[in-house]
Image 1: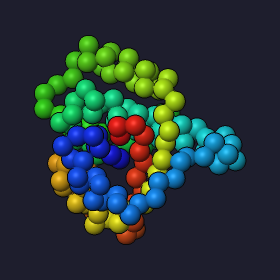
Image 2: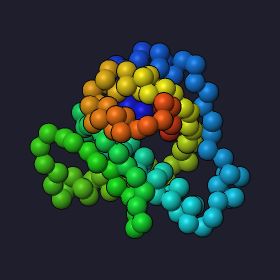
Image 3: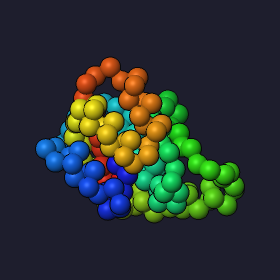
Image 4: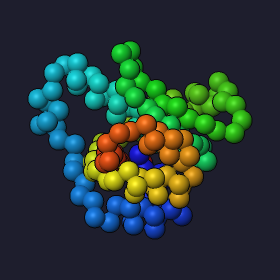
Length: 147
């Protein structure tokens, strides 16, 4: 999860990911997946796109997790105020537009301590909480365009 690397947080992004090697998500690897794993991958990617457009509309939003589920996907957000039907309709339009782009997905791994610094510096307090439940010392980050 990245929070607009073109924003005022650019220096923390550069610091945290300075030694990272980003790997493109491979179409060949995708083709090797089982049908159910392909569906899980698509749903997980959709949750990232949802978070991307949500942050575009609500840059102050706090993000938690966005897992694929048996029936689809979701993303937990926290914002001030309430979403209304018109907000949801606009988010749906933004989501469809973002899905139609040929975005390149890339991933890398960084230490939990670097991830914590990134999340604390960008005010993503819910992500800091998520990190506390991860046992591994490295976490995977996915990026595409501004997210």
